[in-house]
Length: 116
Image (cartoon, rainbow, N blue to C red; front, side):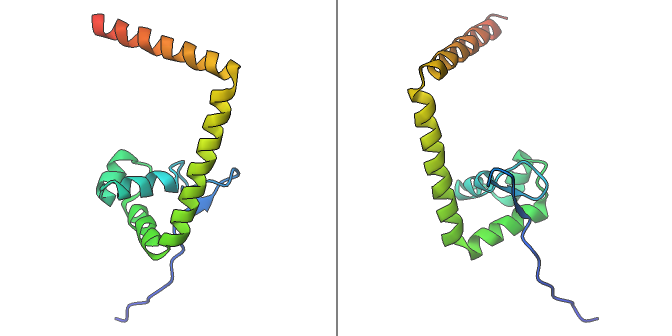
């Protein structure tokens, strides 16, 4: 039997907002590569994100290792965009009030859970 070697397309897609996601999941490339760079194995990534198959986790990491410069540039661009959004939110007084209410709500929830 002869092994048929075929080129495979990486399990990556760009959604309507320009975010690269893994296969048909909502998991982002940022998430998988970030976990990998923090020392997670493909098996650990799949345990954290069960919608990602083990084969896809390995394929995405392989893609990253073959295209490190491109992926790193994409990830850096995403970090800059996130920082811009964060600055916009932090400079908006309405958003600050919403954030404060959410923090107060979380604090009261945590305090209520501890007394139970």
